[in-house]
Length: 277
Image: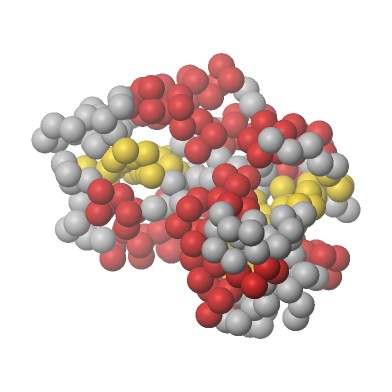
């Protein structure tokens, strides 16, 4: 394994760019390959077999065509459905998943009421049920499946995003800092941070929004160091000069321009997108 090998990151579409943004801030010298499976999105509304098949196919493509040295599954649904099998099939590959940030939210809440916005696939998974059980008694979690929201963000359908944010936040009850109100909101899909401003406006300034980008990035760095994966720039601390900034390769199974525009908007980069077969 070489330090110059990239880290692979994939999601059902552009939502995983919220994780990639945090990864590039945490590991600025590393090369990354980002795979947007937009041709098969949204995962949260597909059955388990379909999500598992796509996760396996993408992992194989990232290994065979891009020679990745680690993999970040930047999708809550794909993590819940596929990560255990992918790890079993590729035991030598460091694999990092994401999950809704219930643990940090439980530590932050003062009213002990936490809203959780996520896809139906995530909320109905065994992995999520186990996470919820592990936090029993720490807080009351109000679970809100958000059908269509990830897809609307993917397609940048502004009016639909606004309508769905209105609908789903109202469905969780009252927000605020008083007893009986929800004071912490978990963004349990990697797409949702890109609607954070809209959501914050609806729940009020006192409510904390919690996503997984920075915790996943920190965990990725620590896992790579623990597994002795060679890193560019000698694993220099974030924000320091430890080598040249790593490059980013973009791949999509859907229309390339959708990913390119999302990267322009959210990462402030203008890069070509390769079409996956």
